[in-house]
Image 1 (cartoon, rainbow, N blue to C red):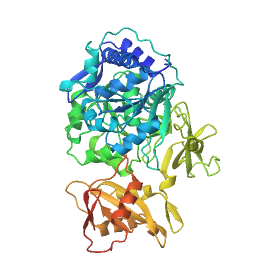
Image 2 (tube, helix red, strand yellow):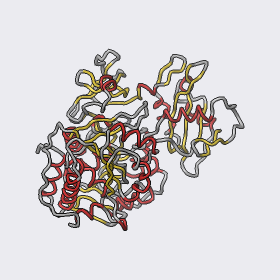
Image 3 (cartoon, rainbow, N blue to C red):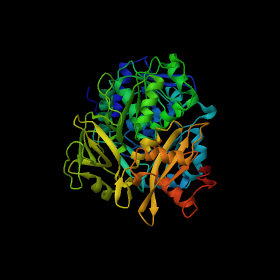
Image 4 (cartoon, rainbow, N blue to C red):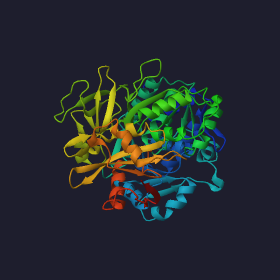
Length: 532
């Protein structure tokens, strides 16, 4: 069935699946059925329209994961508003900048975050509606209980697939954050692609552990389950110590994660087999998945890991590896599902299989451009294709392999290579939990290679062993000059390691310092980093 809008999707499923559980909150012990979810969404829609909400108004969401967010996210869209998700962990100045750039007219927040951001919001030209309630009751329950009014139809402007639904700001790893404009049609097309690629049915239960201010959480584990008629278990945040209990207790069949989460789970005790019996697959996206992590996760938990690839500009997924028994290729992000994918050279010409170039994408899920940023839009959207900035190649079977980002390539004395080549080898060391290589300025070679490593709990590793190990697999010019052991990595909203921030940290804390044996421990980003 073709839906005209996210609102129509929610109305259809709420009517079709009356009495079937859609959302579950583990911490609160609360379940919402599809029809209760629809009722909550329609009552929020009515409340927003009563405030004078107009079609196309930008509405910021500042709240934690949970039923509140799930209701508010689709409730704003149902009213004709455009959702502007804001990472609540940003600094006030960053929030102010995003709200101003989006031209936000309304900020919706829950009780907890309202207290944090009230001093900031008070000075902005926006209307404020505190959706929190005394005693911490959930917005979703409050709206579904009947205390907010009846459920009669609300008159709102008609919505179509070309209407803007979501204004999502990129994490800004390449500069100033850009507002990605996604329509109702983009989101619905993407949900259809994901449902098809992962063969999702109403019998599936997803565990949503990624933040709902990120495209992966919003589309993969909220809108897509509505599209497929499945169930979503939505804790307030990811907790490794609770993860397998949630999987066991709710009979979770799949989850979407970033590689960082898979690495963290590998550092925790193995759950009993009852926690694994319901899982069909684990999905990894939003950052490159090291082959060593994939193989270890599958071997330890006996669960297939499906690596996928997507971007905010494509409403999430572009390619995915197929489910067993079809061929999955470790190191590949799979095949296009619904999209067209090409790899091109600097002149925009398609290159042969096996040749590396820039990945470009076309499809119904591709956004219409960047909000109030014609220059960035013109640079990335050419001739109907979105130029991703990602480098990779297609093999003879059409599987996509990513090799890095254009702006992340290391250029050491004229030798250009991707830092991911080094990352992949580092993850083969059993002591390593997270790793990332970067290029740092060097007066002789232009750039030198530095590797950052976060060890697994209780493990130790010497720098000379790391260097020796890398020399067995890499050309000398790719071997890092230094290895820096760090307790935690700077990450974006999706959990992706931010290499540019690692370079900044290196320049601030280590440039000009004496290197060599006997180097001590220096603080970096508030943590103690052992330099060995």
